[in-house]
Length: 274
Image 1 (cartoon, helix red, strand yellow):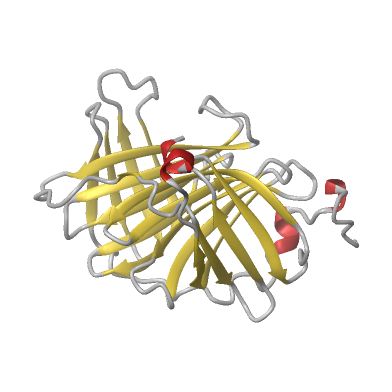
Image 2 (cartoon, one colour):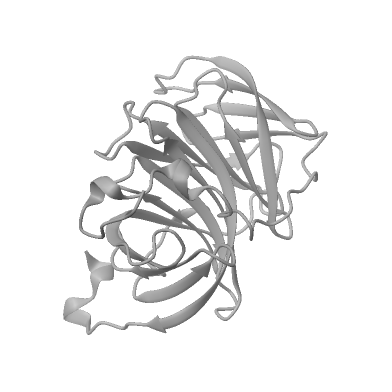
């Protein structure tokens, strides 16, 4: 199918992007296998995760004010090492395939951030895939440093991301709510759009960047180490619907990035104040 740049009906579906897009994905790690890690949020909701070699068994116990019912399940997972003691785990619910979980575990600092992605459902927002961000602590661990929190640090940066020898994009981080992407190489070359985003800092210089597309029914959660701006490394997952618009699609990827430029706005026009 050819792409007409201004005709969004010809844009590639999520599953059309997948072949080869994951070439720069980092190797998965087995560091979490054999461990039970329980995260507890401010409501007292507890989620115990028992990691095996390739599957995670989880038990959800709601706290006060949490309307989600208690549940248990088991899903296949992938985990990536981001930094010393910092892990990015991904699983797509088998019992509820319209939901997927990104779990950021900072074992060194006793902190966690869960990002739940849902096709439709009750989460805030109007995009086809919605996202919910839930910071937490790791039960039994000492908490150090700052808790994961939204940040405006990336605003003004223009970063190029290379996902494979064929796929490259650039991101321009505009405001706390918006970013622009442009495909520089690959099957979407020449396409560009501005979509919703959320950015959370989990450690100094390491950020969760998540976006929600309005044209294609998909969203993504990534975690990127920006401490060396000439050699940024990211790990991510894409989640949404296939070309039929009925089948959930979930796959992980990775990218190498570098800072291209940085815009600094005069104080009266600074979008970080939006």
